[in-house]
Image (cartoon, rainbow, N blue to C red; front, side, top):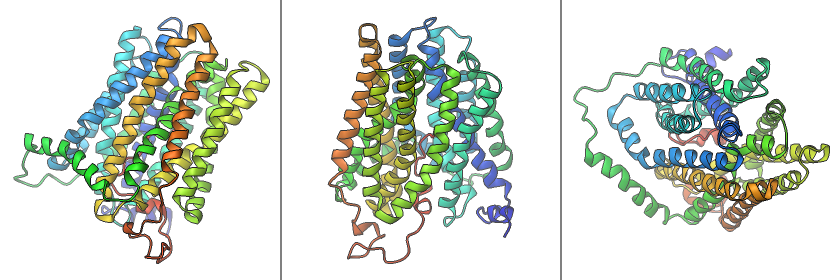
Length: 459
């Protein structure tokens, strides 16, 4: 079967262009994640012409916390609209435009206006993911959703490579200002196919509108889900541990450009080249971590990944003591390679770990809680990191970045300690028999990810 036929077999439409168009949206939103969240906004806000390093890092943390926190609060409402309304693409289009337009005009804006525009755009970006993930049910069969989801993840990684190549090809190596408009154009170009190609069935006649009772019920569901989670051995401890180690992962993704340029003394162009290499490392390492998950299980693999992050963060602290030196930059790149390889490992291992801890009947419900924990970690981590840099950078210089990275190291170690006693051998997931062994050949992890499992941004 040729590649086009294989793609066509993944979707009820029988058209290969449908999964292609759907996957390209994953590439599009990764452009926003990498170009704006991970690269441009931090450099833009911490420029001396705007807020400077300390206040700029705090403003960035507040903007992330407000946008992600508000999104987490109203996610049940947005989800209720998605479920009851029966149409997702109109909402996806609205939030996509709301992410693209404000972010594209940040460059020439005054500092306060730019921060506000980023807050709106990041909220919209997070909200769009709710509807994008939900469209997976329309473009795939139940048996092919995991496979198509995995294709989307892989194509999403390409968004980072495409963006870095375009920015370097255009010579955008000195100032972040043009990145906002360029990434907005790339976001729009790669997002357009999903709206032209993917067709939703019309909403059933007589479908009820979302009521306040539906909205209240969606918010109450969080408490109900926590109660259900208490019944599963180790699940709540795992989720609390995830709150801590995700704090370090998500925060470092956002601040890495500022650490590289303001802390290590690299140029914007050098950062783009290094990040390009590290993304390739992350992609290749993801396959290796996936094989380790299959061989040794998600628990041992996740512990190994988090331990590697501990090493990488320690090396990062050492590198920051030697800014603008060949030795310091070499150590920094080594730290980035370790952390970059572990980034894919975290995404691979902890989702499979979550599956091992979840009964099949509550898989989607518990993945909703899993996603909420990920968003909560961004709020806490960004505020703590930004506050440390804000309070100490004027007196300690790079020492402030070192202490901020050490705070991430502490949360990583706490997360590692929390998940250490949690077993992935729980037979209630249906994946293991009474002896704790696989009763049949292991299904590839990506096929086990439910359609509504949140896919976090990749960089």
